[in-house]
Image (cartoon, rainbow, N blue to C red; front, side):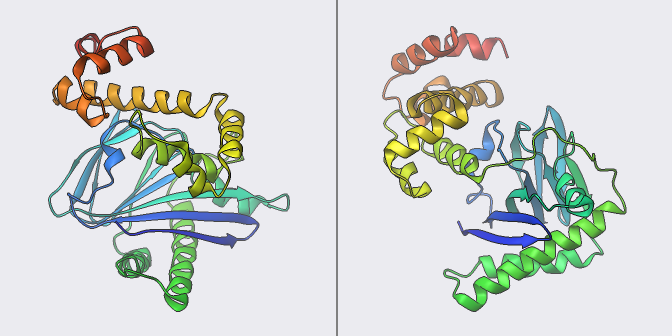
Length: 284
């Protein structure tokens, strides 16, 4: 699945976009099928088809031409993608500088409302800009000119979205945490995809361009736990999501999490939560 990371400035804000294009149901982002959250705002745009999600236990249906802004640390998961789904997912890390003024902060605060915001983009120029982004993402490799085009279109998308939104939606102006770390998104996403018991910290250290010793120091600083503890936390989240949110058998879930037998999986969940998988499912 095409994935790109783009850096640019808007005013006195440093923006980093991690964008993923899901072209069909089979290619959908795997980790969205259990309840999870990100350390940065997530924007989901549906170009065609539809997507059913739950965010903060509230149900949303996002149809073609609509954009859902999910604030950071809001638990959500995809319930269903239509067969003809074509979805653009954007993780936005945005950090104000010391020189940020009221306009910069109004832009910043747009992505940190108390609850998800569903916007219709039909009839706006944003649709055309997103179409250009999707087309560029389909290229197997972006050379210099295409990469700069993608950066320019992403910048234009956010600026136009801000202009469109501030006139039509009530956005909260105050948030408590003004520092969002892209490292947290990379760590959360890596562990969410490489969550099996034999997962190694080496691959994550490579993604962050640090040594394993530095990685353990980063995880300790950000989460107050070590890599194995963070991995365990994510595995419990994934397992609980599957147990309470799907009809998969406990044996299937154990296999998905990398356990060769059901008793090992049951022992892990009992040790981590005090409950067996059957008790968790029964108590949902």
